Length: 139
Image 1 (cartoon, rainbow, N blue to C red):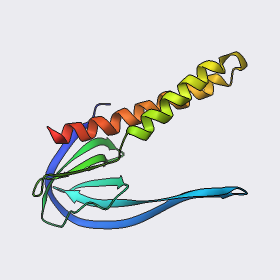
Image 2 (image 1 turned 30 degrees about the vertical axis):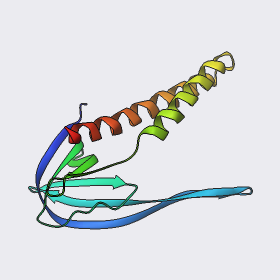
Image 3 (image 1 turned 45 degrees about the vertical axis):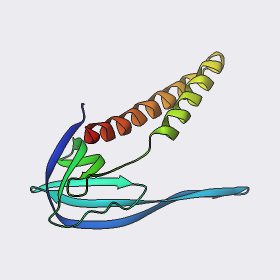
Image 4 (image 1 turned 135 degrees about the vertical axis):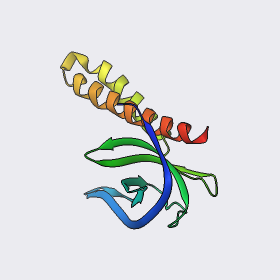
């Protein structure tokens, strides 16, 4: 399904911080992100970003993403008042995807390589979607 854009006036902004991670014997990682839910012209929109975007009720915005279960899942957001574009950086996804695909090819002999190829391909697909969403809003 192709990425689409949705433009309009923001209303009913709800904000939440999301903390994810794991802790093991040798340490762990914890990552915090921001989730925004709001409406654009009576259409429900949800976006997850690493940083909090500067958006207020009544401002004109454009989001890029996909419709899923009656809700628009945005991958990037542009505040049309300030021209600021907010999105998840795709560089790390590209790096991880390429590493997984290379590792998958090396492990194809043991058949577990198929799993690595699948995960690497999906990671590259997601990184591509994030970068295309930001590109859609910068033009």
